[in-house]
Amino acid sequence: MKENFFEIGAKFDDGWSSDNKASSKSKALEVKEPSKHNLVFAKEKRRGKVVTVIKGFCLQDSELKKLLKELKSSLGCGGTIKNDTIELQGEVYSKVKDELVKRSFRVKN
Image (cartoon, rainbow, N blue to C red; front, side):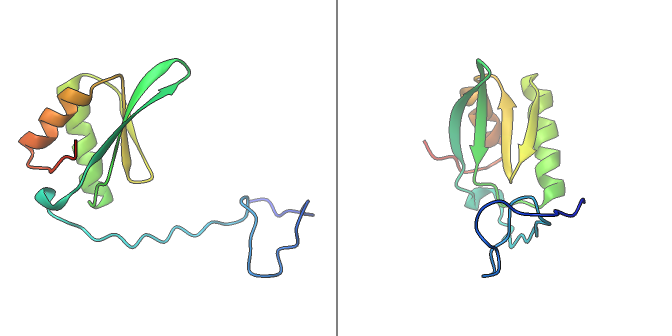
């Protein structure tokens, strides 16, 4: 990463750091079984397209990637993982909810 020669704005001597400096990714995640999850759905518009966002997963990264791959395959849509949330292309709320209930996840309405 390139080192900054100067910072514009406040001084960061008080323990604060700027956004473009090295970020620490500390992740204290308690892994839970699927029936203990409280999944929350959100619908967002990005560049005129609808994206279904699912938050509240308490899984390891490998398990979350595996779940995303299975959901994309069964729903026939694209998707990604960002900050422990799954983002799926399109308005697929009811289909995703059915798939997650089949896998014994608890879904909030």
